[in-house]
Image (tube, rainbow, N blue to C red; front, side):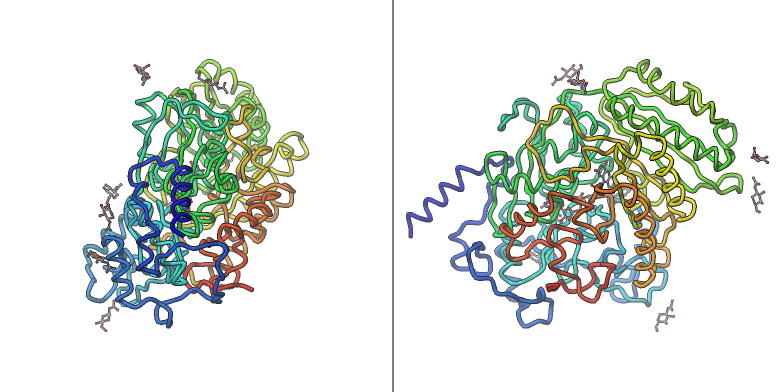
Length: 629
Ligand SMILES: Cc1cc2nc3c(=O)[nH]c(=O)nc-3n(C[C@H](O)[C@H](O)[C@H](O)COP(=O)(O)OP(=O)(O)OC[C@H]3O[C@@H](n4cnc5c(N)ncnc54)[C@H](O)[C@@H]3O)c2cc1C
Ligand SMILES: *[C@@H]1O[C@H](CO)[C@@H](O)[C@H](O)[C@H]1NC(C)=O
Ligand SMILES: *[C@@H]1O[C@H](CO)[C@@H](O)[C@H](O)[C@H]1NC(C)=O
Ligand SMILES: *[C@@H]1O[C@H](CO)[C@@H](O)[C@H](O)[C@H]1NC(C)=O
Ligand SMILES: *[C@@H]1O[C@H](CO)[C@@H](O)[C@H](O)[C@H]1NC(C)=O
Ligand SMILES: *[C@@H]1O[C@H](CO)[C@@H](O)[C@H](O)[C@H]1NC(C)=O
Ligand SMILES: *[C@@H]1O[C@H](CO)[C@@H](O)[C@H](O)[C@H]1NC(C)=O
Ligand SMILES: *[C@@H]1O[C@H](CO)[C@@H](O)[C@H](O)[C@H]1NC(C)=O
Ligand SMILES: *[C@@H]1O[C@H](CO)[C@@H](O)[C@H](O)[C@H]1NC(C)=O
């Protein structure tokens, strides 16, 4: 017995490759002998099959003394937070001044990112507690978790997972809180708040199987902004999300993760060299090309919140790769002094076709496009405005001018005269067109709008490579925007670099053929948590309508997929949409690694085995998580 556990310890020690000191602070097996609630899980153990996760009031929900023991053993990092907007409601916490500042600041991401439970997509909580104008309405915990572990060590994460698994409590993970689909919260749950698992360390010569070169070790909760100075100091280019507070090792690198360099260097998930994570059994493991290869494959594309809680990652970075960017705008509304405004709708959509024709050569040149078709008003006229930023890595300004000239000539022929000086050409080393963490509800979806419904589809090379398909795609997008009334957000990239740094991963194979990740979203404020909120049945109706339009995009992109982090997790075809042919293998890994069903997120791998009770078809996190079978 003694020698066996000694061997296990040795084995573990030899395969763990830690990136940060706080990962060395781990739960030991010895500690669990006297405290069974935090014992590790063993995949071979018989699993008591409970239909639903436990909720407060249930006989098996831990009593106060048990929570206290858990907190004491954690060293006091257990929180029981109330919803952020509580001061807006009648009761002991009512505070009019605080409420007013919450209302005005509600669109400020920092507010939500720094709160242990608040998230950007408030609808997912069931709009349980939004800054209300009617203080006598009620603020409830809704879809927000009941308890939070403010994790700063691997041990905190391990204890939380073991306690939740052994006590049959739902577990959720909150990182930055940006998720568009409520995958970062859950009713009656224990949340692991990874926000304070921070670290950023540059390695000039990191060696892994098949790789030797630049890399950065990233803490499980580190946001993009933690890497800005590192990039400059070490003259390196690195994939980062556009929003400065979005996590790097969370959903971004586990579900895809694009940046302006994604056509030439792939997605962030393509560049992950090593992952440290606490798996469903409570153990901290290293996954790389030689260790726990199943997890290494699954974590890179399988999506956040499915296979474990990542404490850190090592991600390959690149030699400093400058890019030029330029912008093009044209509109159907009159804009003073703009020759490319006041276009008729038909000319506008001819202009869009010229842009679509540009997308294949653009991606083949390594480019990244970031565009919108927005419903906009100007001089009392409502219409559509197209804006795009065109980024070309490794291009000089004069090369870029030459590259875009044919597009400008074509637009001019159509009646959209854009001249080179209007391009606002810039050359920079490490900024991205999406890098703007502005307030909510103002400009770009990537920058700001969160409280909305979105859906995504990858349009493929075959949609762009002949006139007939381009016409069909243009019509489908036109209907989506004009008849559907949605805004459009396109991102052009083809993450299929000639030299792949890492072995194949679980990302949807359609990414390799993609020319555009296209999103549609609602433009009004129904989802912002401040304006009067929609009822559950209204939300469901909005969702069904958006899915109806999305079907028209699906119909012309057979076999393609969707980018889960910027799409609709409640797509009826989540398996095909997010993973395609990789789904079955992902499900096998999920069943082997998590036979308990510890990890569950909407639209996740194996997520159809569970459901949030009381929600039919449209899922908010306000409810009990139960087995669906
Ligand atoms: C302003 C803004 C800009 C964006 N820019 C980009 C962009 O440029 N490129 C791009 O690809 N995407 C971008 N996104 C989309 C972004 O990838 C998603 O919103 C994503 O869900 C954010 O996840 P998060 O990990 O930061 O945080 P959360 O919302 O807290 O978590 C999301 C999910 O990830 C899981 N998760 C988080 N951390 C961990 C962890 N340590 N271990 C295991 N699971 C974890 C959670 O369980 C949850 O399921 C942007 C989003 C916004 C709002
Ligand atoms: C956990 O313990 C700390 C330190 O004693 C205390 O401040 C905190 O309120 C406790 N958490 C809960 C949920 O009781
Ligand atoms: C957002 O909130 C943070 C933290 O409360 C604050 O420092 C920052 O100034 C706010 N930003 C804006 C634009 O109000
Ligand atoms: C809220 O309820 C209190 C007590 O019933 C009442 O005095 C007050 O006018 C109500 N406020 C509003 C805004 O309805
Ligand atoms: C969470 O932990 C961090 C690091 O110890 C600490 O700075 C922060 O105040 C804690 N947050 C809360 C809400 O307790
Ligand atoms: C980064 O580049 C700058 C400017 O070229 C140079 O001065 C500096 O030494 C470089 N830093 C490193 C770490 O290579
Ligand atoms: C816009 O175009 C319409 C129709 O071509 C024309 O009648 C109108 O005067 C134009 N408005 C502006 C501000 O140029
Ligand atoms: C827009 O409409 C308002 C109200 O009808 C009017 O007062 C204003 O002059 C109009 N502005 C323009 C630029 O036409
Ligand atoms: C871009 O430039 C960098 C730095 O010079 C170089 O290493 C890289 O290979 C280039 N990438 C492409 C796709 O040309």
